[in-house]
Length: 337
Image (cartoon, rainbow, N blue to C red; front, side, top):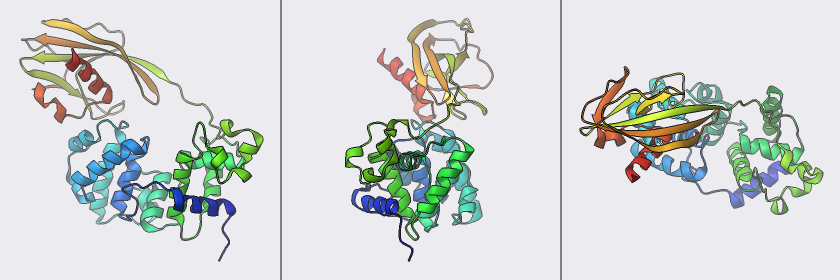
């Protein structure tokens, strides 16, 4: 039997002693594993755990999830952000049901809506024991620091370099333990800031520690341009009704609902009734955008003329609609007035 690299052995031993106890660990149910991986994209474990439990309680099987409506899934997802994940999750569930079973090959898993190389490798290794290294942000960081790799992780060369190294370190028959160990090690020991180098079981061989580059690795090439958008929301309260619009494709928050929106420097349209400003310059940060929102409440007895696409609902029913977190925050301010 091939001897394991010291790095690999150390990760496996550390994981066996220190791995996090999570509700989706200890199962090889591909649905449960897949759901956890999708939820944990861009989400902290602490928050994702509760969402996973609620999803599993409401839709314990992929068939149940596939039978839900998109609105129901979006509503259950509310607060997690990156709502394309929820839409992809729902559509992938329908793919799986249409195929008759959960795919058990990397190619088949990768073909599911919203599944990339990392997620496919994680699901494949954990649920089916496939020998695939899962490389996420934690893995990039651990490998870059320990082996002193300065290739930018967000370039083609970097992705190939780290994927090849992770695959080389993968132990035969223990891909799931190694992948989960690397994730936990990056999250608990080799953290982005203030890593626990003094207590790290790999500190004797860590290139970044010895060369004083822990804070410089991994390297990421700057490519992101952040834009600021100005939003004005008007919550219309008219005889117990309010107006909502469902956002379309091609922009943020696709498929979610929002009150009357005026974007940019356009003035508010003339409207009958009492209009008051309840919040101004509320900042909401997304990956590629900074949103600055003003929030108004219009109390009126006459329905204002609205652009096409708005519907009137009972105000008491607004919780049935999936809303962006920014709109939720603004409604919380309104309720405090």
